[in-house]
Length: 182
Image 1 (tube, rainbow, N blue to C red):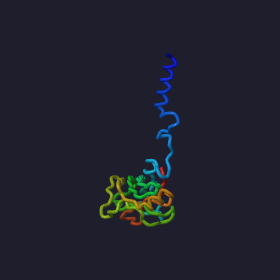
Image 2 (image 1 turned 135 degrees about the horizontal axis):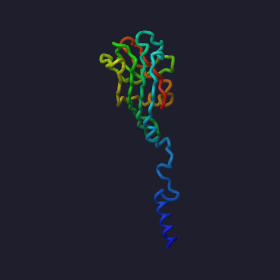
Image 3 (image 1 turned 60 degrees about the horizontal axis):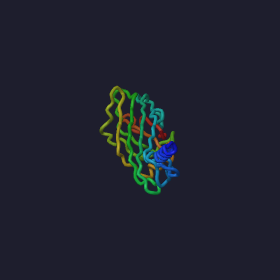
Image 4 (image 1 turned 90 degrees about the horizontal axis):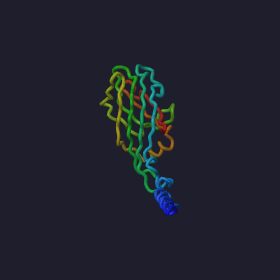
C-alpha cells in the first residue's frame, strides 16, 4: 500500500511540473522568430538638462531640467523584424523661471554634443505651450507612430538619440538628454 501511495505522489509531482522531458513554456527560450513580450515593449529614459544643449543655455532658463521616459511598443513579423512601432512619452519638467513657455518636444538623432534632425514628434503644437506651475509641468503623450527603421535604430544605439524640449526663449532647445535603455 505504501508503494502505491509513493507512486501516486510521484506521478502527481511529475504532472505538476509538466511531465518528464516535456519543456514548459517558461523553460523554452525565445528565438528571433518568437520574441518575448519584453522584447516588444522597451523603455528608455533621458536626463534633461539645459547644459546638454548645443550650445548650452545661458539665459534665464539655464536652471531648467527634466526627466523623460519613452516606451516603444513594437510589432514584429515572423522573422523578428519590426513592422510597426508606437511610442508613449512621460516628460517631467522643473526649474523653469516664471513666464517660461515650453512649446515643442521631439526625439532627435545625434550623439551627445551634436545637433541632429527630428525623428519623432512628442509635442508638436507650438501655439499651445506647456502650462507650468511654479516652474514645473509635464508632457504626456501615447500612441505616437514611429517609423520602424527609426525604432530599430533607437534599439540598436539609443545614445545616438536625444529628447529635446524647446521653449519660446530657446527655440533650438532648452533641455536635452540622450536616451538610455532602462
